[in-house]
Structure formats: C-alpha cells, structure tokens
Image 1 (cartoon, rainbow, N blue to C red):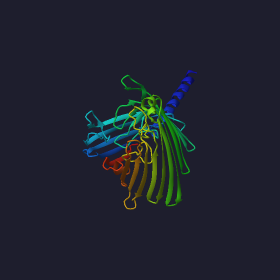
Image 2: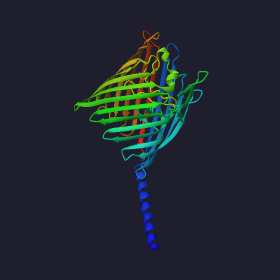
Image 3: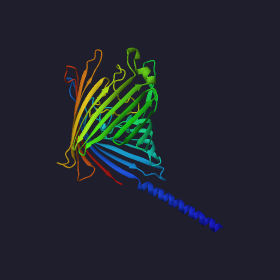
Length: 434
C-alpha cells in the first residue's frame, strides 16, 4: 500500500509539474517584446503682435520597449514598458515648450525616461482587465503621443467585446504627462480658504463607454465623471460605403458636452454674472476616396458658456492629465475648440506609391471664427498643415515623416495678432524582438 501511495503521489507531482510547465510554455509562447525608435526634431516659432519671435528647437532620440506576456493558465499576465528620451540638441524660447524633453526650473530640457506596467486578467478571450500604469486610448481618457514619449495613467481598466460591440471602463487615480517620470493624483476642488485660495482633495476620474463596428457602421459613446470637478459626454457615428471598385464615401457626426459640477461649479462659475457651467459642441464630416486620391470636409461648432468654460477640452483636474480633444478639426497646432468657435476644414491626400513605393502626402486647411460677446472682439482663426510620409519598402518598420503647420489668430480687422509655426521631422523604426 505504501508503494502504491508513493506511486500515486509521484504521478500527481509529475502531472502537476507537466501542467505547470505547459502553462509556463504557453505564457512565454504568447509573449511579445516590441521596440519603437523615434528620432524627433521639432522647431516651434511663436510671434505675438510686434513682440520678438519666441523660438523653441529640440532634437531627441526616444527608445521604447514594450513587453506583453501571454496568460499563465490562460488567466493572468503582465505588461511592462521602459521608455527613455536622449537629448541631442536644444534651444528653448521664453514661453513656448515643445514637450520633447523634461524641463527644470530654468526651462532647460534634460534627457528623461519612464517605466510602467500592469497586471492583466484574461476575460474569457473576449477582453481584458488591467490594473497598473498604462497608455490608455479612449475618447475621454487618452494619452497624447505626439511628442517623444506618451503620457500614461495609473488606473483600473477593462474591456469586453462581443458581436461587434466593445464595452470598456476605467477608474484613473493618477496621471503622468508627456515629459514627466513621476505621477500626480487626480484632484478636485474642495473649498476656498479665507485668503481665497482653492484647496483640492484626491478624486479619481471614472469613465465608461461602448463602441460598435460592423457593416460599414462605426458607433461610439462615452461618459466620464470626476466628483466635484466635471462630467463629460462624447458620441460619434460614421458610415462608409463603396460607390464602385475604385471609390468610397464616408459620412460622420460627433456630439459632446462638458459640465463643471459640485464644488468646482460653486467656486469657479460666476452664475450671478451669467456664466454657464456646461458647454456643448458638435461636428459633421464627409469624405471620399477615388483610387489613390482622398478628400474630406468637416465642420465643428463649439457652444456658448457665457464665459464660464473657455473651451470644449475635457476638464479633469490634477493628474497632469494629457487627454486630447477628439474633434474633426483638431489638427497639428490648434484644436479649434474655443468657446463660441465655429470652424471648417478641407483635406486632401494622395498615395504616390505608383511613382515611389511607400510615399504618401496630405494637406489640409482650417478656417474658423471665435464669436466673442460684449467688449471683446471677434477672432479669426486659421491653420494649414502639410505632411509627407515615406515608408521604406526595403526595410519593414522604417518610416520618414515631415510635418509643417502654421496657425494664425487675428482680431477682426487686424493682422499679426498671433502666429505659430511648427515643423517636425521624424524617423521611426518599429521591430519585434519576439
């Protein structure tokens, strides 16, 4: 009996070790390590009236490593990232900042990095739940990645997909900007001191949403709230269809609303003076593709808060939040989302691959107007963007990008009130280690 018991125990141990080994093997087989290299040169120039032009130049090399594991026992895994930006050259102005480098108290940029990661749980192969520090990409809580490194968020996040629908939600406690290594708490206004100073308390940002994709139709809706700070709503819908084998059409619409709530409404909104605590906006878009040529037109109309809310940006408080506005007319320099601003955009693009494999280009122009009331003058706004991309066909993952933009804002009947120029040169290379 003792020998039989020992044999059974041995078999159980061997079976457990074999199962554990198989699970560990699956964990590694489904893992990946991806590298992203971004060589980035940016030149910004701001001219306000007759003041001296304020120039800001930087050149950096960013390195990103992203490890994503498989799931141990098809249940639990980890994501780990290590990013670093190395300063090559820099020449900063007095007021502008291109956010390629971390700045010190003297406005001088330095090399910097950030490490972050999250534990993840597999939701029946249809979604994932994560907790940790991560790069988010949702309409009302997203990370800006238009510089050397992206911003990140410390949060709980989950999504689940079924029948073309994706449900997602997040609870964010801390934020990290594009040029930060550390994290700061999301905080909401709490009270006013006797000296008129606003005090703040920790307050997480909570968002949830749903999207659908299928049969040419794309739908999305998201809602977010930070107690005693703000709430926000975002919706979008688009439909695309083929006219023939060479051309297609896309139509789209957006609607959003931001609302200052709770203590922030009491402290920051002057209701007695007529200010409103909410601001609504909408956008419309139509686009067509003709073979290798594409074109689109769009408009965005931002509502009137009577001076209570300056723009339609998502107003989360604290956390060094870098959530970006998702309007159709958000372009390289400006988002065209000021209160009472209506703007129109036209964009054209062409794929030159028949002439040079991997070459494409696009150009756009936005014109807008901020309709101020009272003694303030109306402001005419405009911006043009030009972009050229070349994906090297001989080396998969290597891409060259040139972007140039110019933005103007002038009070009615005036010129040269404010001009911004922004030139960017990027060389990016992506490859998988495994």
